[in-house]
Image (tube, rainbow over all chains, first blue to last red; front, side, top):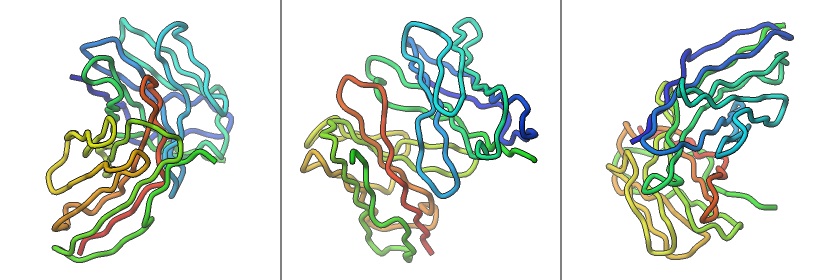
Amino acid sequence: AQSVTQLGSHVSVSEGALVLLRCNYSSSVPPYLFWYVQYPNQGLQLLLKYTTGATLVKGINGFEAEFKKSETSFHLTKPSAHMSDAAEYFCAVSGSGTSYGKLTFGQGTILTVHP
Amino acid sequence: EAQVTQNPRYLITVTGKKLTVTCSQNMNHEYMSWYRQDPGLGLRQIYYSMNVEVTDKGDVPEGYKVSRKEKRNFPLILESPSPNQTSLYFCASRVQGSETQYFGPGTRLLVL
């Protein structure tokens, strides 16, 4: 069984400020972890993913995330927010075995960026 | 261009009127799935298919049917839609052995 919890359904930051979106997961097998972004009226776009290897992963648009097994976390960060980052962000987990390829999503976090 | 397409993008219907949402991918992916997105609930898997003629239930399959007669197509069928199926629907696909899924643009359904 696997699950994802995103802390904070809405996050608001000023342009140029640090972006931190929190994600905690549970998984009975070694997890694969993903962050997706959804811009208004669009589909989901993969931002970054962790499968194995380096625990700090870099994605598109200056985002990165760190896999912390001891904390079961995969928080998404960006040093300096831009107006174009305003969107909804989803953390997701999949695993190996029978759950391989099945994505379980968090509830989503809406990011607002103020000028 | 490699993509997942869905049709229609927007649909308004009435309770009980059968409808089909089509999904097609041109990447020769074995795995396809359907999700619904509802505010505060994220995306939840409805059905998935590991390959042609192989389908299985996801987390919220009630009220839906699927078929996989061709590798590229994975239609979602609502035999008797109800208002609680008003939602945003996404189709996704991935190649066998890869963990990365590619999503279609979504279909917004309103059932009156």
